[in-house]
Length: 87
Image 1 (cartoon, rainbow, N blue to C red):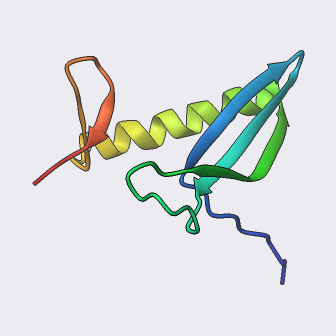
Image 2: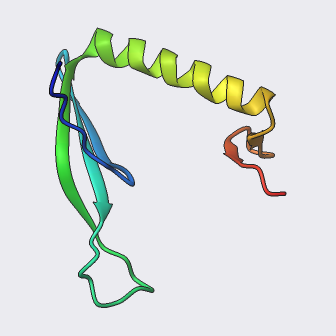
């Protein structure tokens, strides 16, 4: 059995492209930050991949977003972006 490391992330903190390498910071809310009205994000991990792998990953994400939009889980906003559907 493979032992795969799992990392939870609330969002990307930053994406940097240097040449053919893409670095994606995985960030999460800092649970110890005292001000809940001004949340603080902290970098938990970094994914580093070649540019072509990043583009393939983007294509996979786009397919998932399209399927979620078609099923009604997401909806397109007037700006053409997706957001979670509210019931």
